[in-house]
Image (cartoon, rainbow, N blue to C red):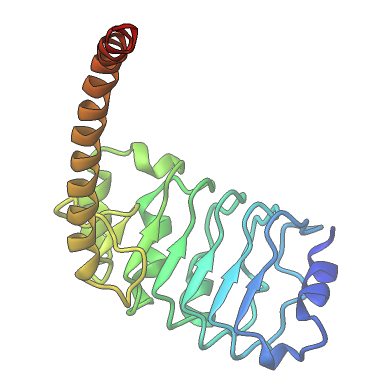
Length: 206
């Protein structure tokens, strides 16, 4: 399905100004450009255009409230300066699986002052020596690169949860350990059961 048509379907009788989230994954951009999005989507906070065949962001409209942008599995190789012009308030950007090879390409994100999380999985740039150190140096505002910060702490699922997530993880691990102990105990009980049954049978025979 063409991107323009998909966007009009996703509106579901709303005006563009009423849309806060828009997902158009796996549709098709006919010429590698963003199609069907206009400046009227001024309330948009989340936009996902995964695997739509994008090669350029040049036709991205002004989206002043956009905070999260999913662009994974496209063919974008540059032109990222458009993002700081059109989406100045981005906090999360996923460019995984694109054609990004050079640090100079990513340098264009320096003007995204609120950018906290950047994903570049499966981009050629990740094979560069000292890739992570270089990105954190280039983009000091970024806290999480490919899901982890500079100390290899994992990014929380949502910004709102903050530090609580770490405690939850510990709690889950404890539960898992208890489950394993419980499973061991059940295994021992199963081993003993046949003997117990045998004893019961003997008593019945008497």
